[in-house]
Image (cartoon, rainbow, N blue to C red; front, side, top):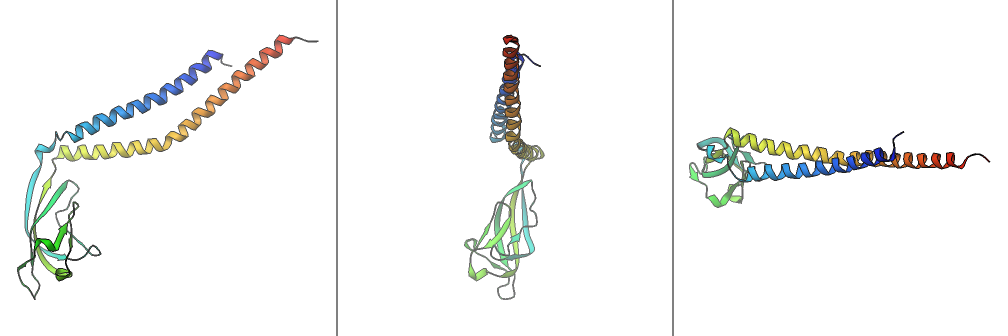
Length: 187
């Protein structure tokens, strides 16, 4: 059986362990977010132009067209031109007000005049992140999801710590009760 000092050390150790874990995670978040937001790795970005990507279409968000050059390490898709190649309006420039492109490279129409155009040619540019920047963004995402996984376990860890704390208090009380019993002597 542990003495009173051993039980208190256990409680203090649990409290400091949880506090240290929380402080360490906060410091890690500050460092990672500061380095990520400093844009130190953006100098290796490249801009690529795609001219007349064929077999594209314009439709609503129910059936959008995803640009062929979409990839995880690419961003900032900008449409430079779209030509309608249908039989009714061969090689007609589609006005920019009639379409949108999302950050994920998904092309949709915003106009009924070009609602179901099944044959358009799309020209656009996109920016490719450098390998270092892309790896850093993946690391940040993995770090965040890892923290989410660990934080999901914190209630379990705290429950175990609370059970250990209660058992320690019960052990202290049983020890004090036995000392009182022994100190009474027989009648």
